[in-house]
Amino acid sequence: MKKAARKGFLRRLSLIACMLLPCMPECVAGQENPVRENASGMLARAAFSPFSPASAMSRAASRTTLPAMPERVSDPDLDLLLAGGHVIDPKTGVYGVRDVGVADGRIAEVAERIDPARAAQVVDVSGLYVAPGFIDMHAHVFHGTVPDQYLANSYGSLPPDAFTFRSGVTTIVDTGGPGWRTIRLFVEQTVRHSETRVLAFLNIVGQGMKGEPIEQDVADMDPKLAAMSAGLHADVVVGVKLAHYLGPDWTPVERAVEAGRQADIPVMIDFGRSDPPLPLRELLLDYLRPGDIFTHAYAAVSRREPIVEDGALRPFALEAAERGIVFDVGHGGGSFMYSVAVPATEAGLWPHTISTDLHTGSMNHGMKDMANVMSKFLNLGMPLEAVVRASTWSPAQVIRREELGHLDVGAEADIAVFRVREGDFGFWDVEGYRMEGDRKIEVELTLRAGRVAWDLNGISKEPWTAE
Ligand SMILES: [Zn+2]
Image (cartoon, rainbow, N blue to C red; front, side, top):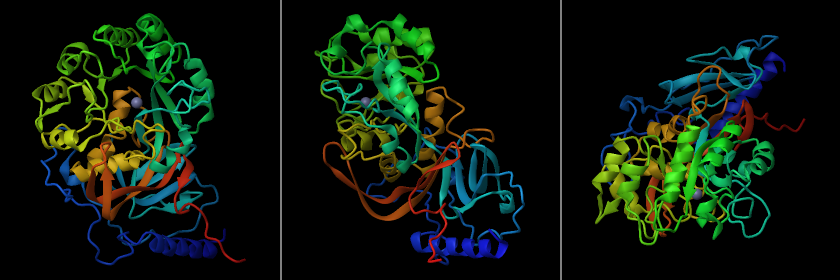
């Protein structure tokens, strides 16, 4: 494109952006910073403490002019430049307005200013946030058409790409769909056919999460074979999952942890429904190891004692968090109640990892998608930087894939570009109670390995003209 035409194109792009994004600071002179230091939702909240990053980082983008466009070099070294966004990158500690350059599918440079002439394409993201692509650490994507197999190669699970990029997710972790008997099918059928990076917690049940009675088959819970299979598929398997066990004994927990020990990977437990109930305190303090994951943390599951009692957080929950047990949201269609989440977070138990528990029973429910679950915690009083951390760098650390969840130079360019809308919103829990909120995360652009995988308003596209 000729220089003059390009300048005109960029000007038009910026005008279109202002029409589409009326809350951008560039578009409204003197408008207040779109992100506040503290939540001012319906509830007065306890100060965020245990997992909070430095507080002074809660400043939104304030660039008021577009970067000047110098002459384009003939041989650009960057494929794409995200210009002027407010970077939130908890791993590297970068919080502020930065340009992000992408080349060969990887992060090439993050700097206060990168010469736009170096890039084959420039996308103006000023007024928007730029974060590592979100990691949804609890979901069900072993989609298939075999009837009556619940979340393992059946209808209850969803194809990953349909539900990830639109909410900024670039890595999704299936939690327990496949077991050691079915992991090969999962890799062939789901992992290899998805643009989203798909990882998995291997079910301790060899058949995987096929519902009842298969998930009760203790004889099919083989730690040695599960660990061996995890090793064979180490590029995909990041942990071991136990879920839905109804028996009154600890054998499945012990076998899952033993598989995790042998494969040196964490274990995620969906606990409860044992008859008679097993004590949650014992699970968290005696059976699980530091780094193991307690999912559905804010649920009140039948026959499982919740982490709150009479509106107060049980002390053992904080004790467990302090000894390194990971508290994961796993919202789902039945596992996030304000009656638990509000007192727990008020008492300081914020999630280490935010996740959806995506499946057909949650996608059109109060859960909706990753951005909606993140928005819930934002409105509960969790600072934006902490919400992003719990959706990027924290899950990357928990699943021990530390090459993910950040914008380090050389990392695969998985990037979520989003805004925080202000207005009157409602967020409902699995019991059907609505909480009002005034902020909502909306994902504008998602890059997966440097490629535009989602573009809500076409900000990476050229404007249509009649010519
Ligand atoms: Zn689940």
